[in-house]
Length: 497
View 1 (cartoon, rainbow, N blue to C red):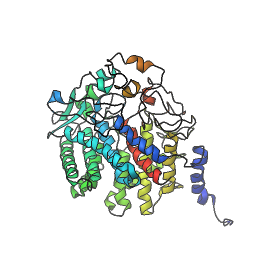
View 2 (spheres, rainbow, N blue to C red):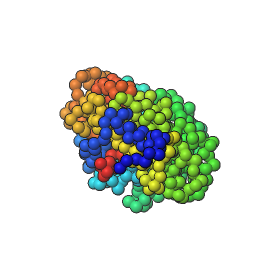
View 3 (cartoon, rainbow, N blue to C red):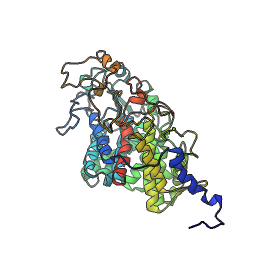
View 4 (cartoon, rainbow, N blue to C red):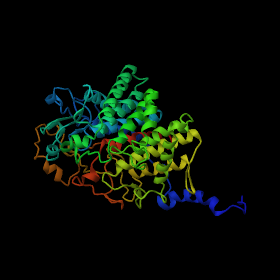
């Protein structure tokens, strides 16, 4: 059927732009050829390889054993458990809390798509919340780190052999840390939703603790990067400031409790806590895009006009990611991967993809689109953008390599990860000391233990190149906060390939 002669270029431009995204900027259309269910299973299994403490009987990653069983003893508190954040043996509370929040959000929004993996995703959340409850057991104190990063990073040893300092670092009234406390409160509140029907008593415990920790964070404001600078910087130094974590925590407490006090807090502090700043950032350091997307759901459901400005910010976030009209801080590689400067790029890819998909679902339910100038960004387009990123991770890229360990025919074999790169205790029962591990670190051989499901930092720059080498830690190191948002994204596509 021919188009009417009166149809102008401006009228068809948005459709042309949308059609051109996959062809011109992504190199190829999505064919949906990946086993997303297998990738989902593996992405959750990864967390078992990151466990600290005494391992349970149903532990599936068998080359790992108990580790760090005396954590917290120097401070007279039990701080065993939790996760090692990456390829080292330190327990950093800030990224662990963010990991927990995103795992919980994955279950909340996409749990219905997880099938038999839902129980494992919930276990992954609880492994972390059990630890966060220990870390917040003392009123007015949050234990935010176990281990000395400098001594840890000078060694290459299995967590089972660890003999580096297990220094306990805390924030309190005299040494505030609203950033890490705010994120911890957000994690506990989000997890309380996960357990609301599964374990009501545990859910109430999580929510009550979240309230207490948030009040502490809000009443004693300050950045933990100042209070604990020598311990947390440059590793997980909060460059962005603590204001976003306070809003983020309030948003999750509002969602979990439905109490008016948190709605009023959000409205009253929107400008003071800079909700509209850096809206295209989302990760362990910067929560702005996540705040705006999370709060916008209520606006799109027609329940919260007083949050309209957050929806405008969320729309701006979406527009900032669209190829061809994206923000200067958001680039696309020739192979179609979102690229942001700063290292460990896949943390941006998975977190931003999660928000694209979550917002797409919110828009779908409200029958809305996002207007970005001449372009109309539909829910389908946002899903397409997210799926393109996931497919890149799983192997649809110029190297034909999956960036998820154990998925596909070709994947990183020399990841920057101590436990994976050293012989397991079963294979080498004798202790491997701090410097003895260096020969394994420098070896050109593949890692002996496959950390199934681990997603590494990814390409070295915007050119799609990747060095499969342990010393290139920004590219070859996996982290919990890369995987956590990917769990939700993979769940969705496993049900909607």
